[in-house]
Image (cartoon, rainbow, N blue to C red):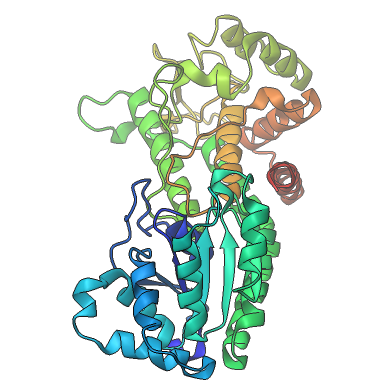
Length: 457
């Protein structure tokens, strides 16, 4: 119930980042955000729900449009300080004000119904008469209030704004909704908690505890999921007898691998509360950027030929695999880490034996299997793209509307790490995988994610 949740109304002048703050704090990327002034045209409520409990409700409001005129109306009658809130309610009771001052009525109504106030400014210029009128109106409401400086316009006027805001608000904080990591969000929530009523403080404390607990378990959760997905991709096979009419073995395996990556990325986005996030496509250097099996770009995500020769040699890869590398991957999978492989023209594999089988029994028909991909660069491609996706997802805020750009590549890892990953791939494809190997892989992923998370904090 809303009565048990902390409720704040986010107000201020248009185009100062109010909606961005709402989006970041509620982890909701459906909040309408635009560079043009007046994107928010009515008061909308967005919530943070955890464990089926509503903990925080933020009302995103249109900005002040005629603050000085509203203040002039309030001051037409001389009232004592304790009567000012009643004067604001009287302003809202005038029916014609809904037509004359629609934005002010929209933002003041939830405030006078009991919501706390978060006043947002970007401090882009000196404090103006309109700014002072907005602050004075909010002071007249008598509601608990804090000010947030969104540093989207730089810090030139921040000192002036801070000194002014301190006269009108109990708390003043600088908060960038476009880059705020968890620590920054928790600091803002704790400041909001200081303003809230006791029953709302309980909701905010639960929210803070929920975010802290979730963060502590996210590393291991992502590591387990990525390790399982990587193993599935490295060992993925298809039944060659079940191809669609006119479909080649290469196309079938390519589609299967792409669909698996898309499904995994979608699941990670859903876990993180994203419903509209897209991958960046940059056709100048990557064709079909969001496709895993764009083999022309494997040298970007994985290792270049010279690097791969060195790492493959260090793992004892078969001569056929090294031949693939030496030809720039043109034969791609012709020659493999294990034997029994028939190379196709496009470079995919059709195995005449079950993956991992080392027996060839007379009189028993062998099943034709497409895959798994044996090219030594493939494990690096899968891991680099997945780590990049998770790192970028983790460091984003829900206020950002740009597409996610994959950045990590395997060539940034040490040769020791590269060799270890390729050895794990060989163990998987030769049926020598163990629980100990799985745990080692998960631990390695945790290290990779931790390092990148620390760098983005």
